[in-house]
Length: 379
Ligand SMILES: CC(=O)SCCNC(=O)CCNC(=O)[C@H](O)C(C)(C)COP(=O)(O)OP(=O)(O)OC[C@H]1O[C@@H](n2cnc3c(N)ncnc32)[C@H](O)[C@@H]1OP(=O)(O)O
Ligand SMILES: O=C([O-])CC(=O)C(=O)O
View 1 (cartoon, rainbow, N blue to C red):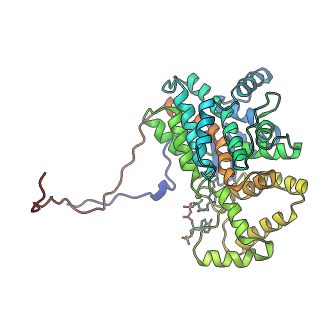
View 2: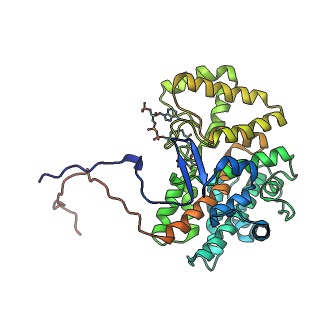
View 3: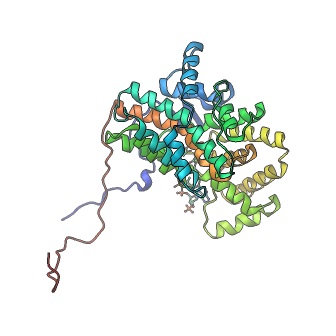
């Protein structure tokens, strides 16, 4: 037999598996468009709610559409009773991504329309998940600190309410804006690992909740969304700016991956970093956190001197979330709260032109063999 070995695309690197109209990541121009709009313009001029509407509907909302959308989002913010009980049953030592994955699964099980895959029903489910996720994350943060649940406020926008439910007060406009910018930047990024996971699950005609919960699992890993948490562990390990270069030399010698650096698609820097770094700078000023910024700059500079690998969005987001006041373990759930928008936009798109996602593999195990007759072993 003269089989020619198929070309293997490890990690699907460079493989175009489908079309999408949701976003365009362009590493050549170092740009990211959501439905055609540059993400920097959206971050500067639009709220996270407007961006969610855009990603789901293809167009920015007019005033009336935005008011209806906000009213629905605000009405869905409370924690469902059995979701709260389930969270209470979990140890406070549970990783917040595990808590969130469990809670989202219960929301799916509560929904009698879970298997209705019409675009209208899926849009309603997506909006419910967008509205409900902050309550889960905020409550988990509070219970880790031995604090009571805070009910949502309908007079606040998404980000202000999220921070209010977490910290018990609405922070300054600078903090709310920096958080909102992070939500806008994290919302969508084409066929990243978690979005692709959600599309794979959707392609079997499973339901939206199953696809979202699978997305949470994929996002948790430190090579993907888990990196924003991992960046902060690295900062804590290094300690001060003056220690950054020596720390990095040792880490690279040990062949460690430096969290918050590198990207599968962008090789000349992540399009979102300048916008998030500017938001981080406003927080550094607000909290006079100049030591943190010095460490940030020192590690970035040390990396640039040793390897041509640039920071990704998780690098400025991690320190930003620390300054806002979240525990490090809460950072990736914040990414989920935002990326639910992108996942669900892709779930709807996948269903519009579905084809079961089922690639091939090249078998490299033993040749065919047969079970020997073994004395004393009967079928
Ligand atoms: C929002 C997001 O999800 S963005 C990604 C967040 N993830 C991280 O920050 C984790 C750290 N980064 C990484 O592990 C990688 O850069 C990834 C997984 C993001 C991308 O990886 P890939 O596209 O597969 O690149 P790959 O792993 O092939 O790297 C190419 C080379 O750069 C090196 N490299 C890439 N990223 C890093 C890094 N963060 N630290 C050290 N070396 C790195 C690799 O070791 C490899 O070197 P080699 O050719 O000498 O073996
Ligand atoms: O695109 C990727 O591979 C990872 C990423 O930056 C994201 O999901 O935001």
